Amino acid sequence: MNDEPASPVCYASQGDDIYMGYGGRDEIAAALNVLLEAERAGARVTLESANDARHPPTKHLIKAVYEDEAKWCGMLSAQIKRIGVIPSTHCGAFYDKAMAIADSHERLAFLNRGQAWVVRKLEELLPRVRDDILHAALSEMRASHVENIQRTEECIAETKT
Image (cartoon, rainbow, N blue to C red):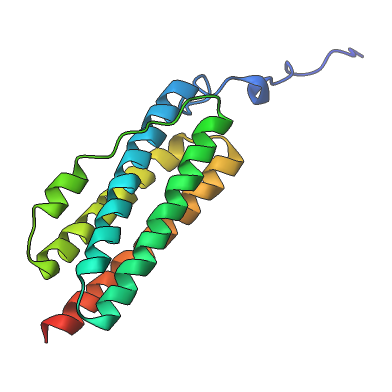
């Protein structure tokens, strides 16, 4: 009888992120900074748009989206720092594009397209994230954006009638 194992021990759990098919720290940090810049732009757009809103339910929605955008800015900054990278201080180009739209309904629709862009970016990023804490935070952020998109679509439809 041979005391040797039938197969060698598997060391896959010791493989680094890139070897295991996940994103490395630099890739993840770059993606998080892009999202942070987009969220910062969204926060600025919603803050200024809330001040311009005349329809009370629309104003309430925009303020709620602003609070959400600010929350995700904080989360992204904290996660970027947690992985040992300095968060970007830039504001995404989305801000200038959105603020160039004078019509409040059109700007709200544009904001919603920006929210959908963030959802797509998160859906691309999530499978590349091995870190359970970051994955959970990004999943929550995605769900929140999906909910905001739906609420904004309802608000737009309501105010058009």
